[in-house]
Length: 287
Image 1 (cartoon, rainbow, N blue to C red):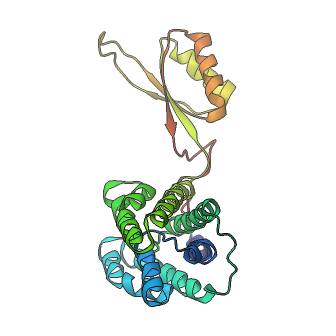
Image 2: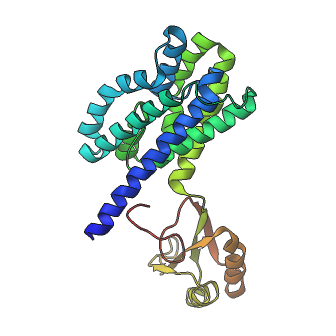
Image 3: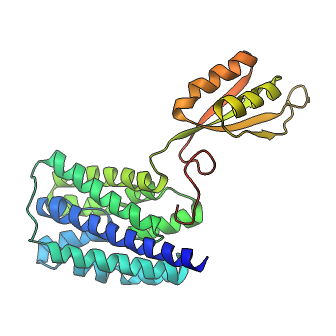
């Protein structure tokens, strides 16, 4: 158990380093050379860089100090706080270390907003998976996730509004619109990294032939089924509810299977952003 815990910590810090590298590459290859800001304090640091010439990474680190203290107090204690400090320190160092040493790959707005946003969101998502943050409004996003269960990507997009307003004043409305595209792509990547690529469906099935349907799902689909006791709201009679998670490709098979035994069955098929456990991606401490 101790060995597994140490291995998990090492993997987490490797993810933090990889995430910090991804953010720095996105900034130095695509965003900063084209005067497009990313969200939060990092974006403010980019604005200050063009106004007074201050290093982007150093100013980002300095602006994050008050939020570090908040992270230690309300955002998960020392473990999350230390990981955030390491993530921001690595990101800040790499942004300044790589500045001017990498070529400007493109000046096409479509390309630098798309790939800049992808690298930024990939980095933030990896650091989130390692139970850290990249500071700034990412700390607020993590706190909102902890307190209210909000999706980090959605919170990041909302809180980016202030940065975009500042960018519009300094660089013009057009650059602010580019920054909005970056924020949108980045937030989508954050959620993608957090939730994974696998999309599944959850089916609720109510039928008089529930035993036959349950048996067929177990044998033909090789999926688990949970039988939840239920009661008809109108008749008051017992109505067992079958709950089953299936992959996207198995939805049509499930519907045909249910229809074979009971064409009048009642089914609700809802999207599941992530399914963990037997038959799907394994559940482990680093998930």
